[in-house]
Length: 373
Figure 1 (cartoon, rainbow, N blue to C red):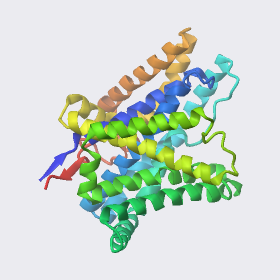
Figure 2 (cartoon, one colour; figure 1 turned 90 degrees about the vertical axis):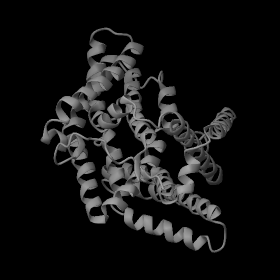
Figure 3 (cartoon, rainbow, N blue to C red; figure 1 turned 180 degrees about the vertical axis):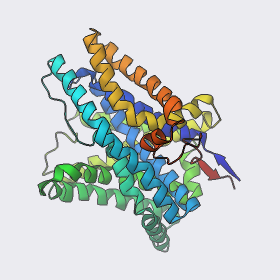
């Protein structure tokens, strides 16, 4: 018998809604007043999201089969991404440029052709070879477990994935990809994919092995202590000048160790969130349903709404703090209303904003299931 995993539904939606506040931090116009928001979000938000995405992706693959999975996921990811890039991103860039100019900002708003749609492109990059990736993970762990315990085999494989991605970013992306013509069109996607692939693989592990799922979703006091210890360790390292920003490019070993540590921070926080939400939020709360069903729509439209609200609040003479909070809250409310009043009722809107060919009235369901056996 299958059951909904409400806590993972909630966490996935929460991470997407948290991205709204990440974007509203642009209220400081690059002055650095809200760097703490960006730093806190960057420490775990996308890591947590990609772990959950890896879990749900394998679940859908095994339930639907390769062809049906690839067809539905490609439409679901590519259609909103193309719509966002073609229509929403240019408007967003114009409004943000105007906001920065009106603010008299010393730094310039970074115009990027993908903006927040980058994560849909990266998810598509992970989706297309997923059947092959799952097979490789299973076979690799099976082969390694001939020479060591199953747990050590999985840790060894995951560590190899992290190391491979670090080396790929260091010597291929930084040393080669950016030197290729037109790299601005695809370089960031490759960089992002190599950054977040280990988290996605961890989600694959969590689905393939039930004991991994149980370990990741129980024992929140233990994961909380581990997360705090690792975070304080990172704070200490940065306090003595050992941060990624200041280590010279020649210090390959130190740089690699710190990158491993960053992965450990993001994973520890994510597992704490998994376990504490599994303990207290694994129920059919109305807020979970609303957030889970509307999160995709909110994410697609959020940066455009944030940009508009920031500009309007700026022209109204609001303080920077008021602009930051009000733009985020208003975007969440308007995004949810737009989902329920438009996206869930109009087929074309459902396709453009959710990648669904037909309105079903069950947006956001029923991916979050796991066998209870």
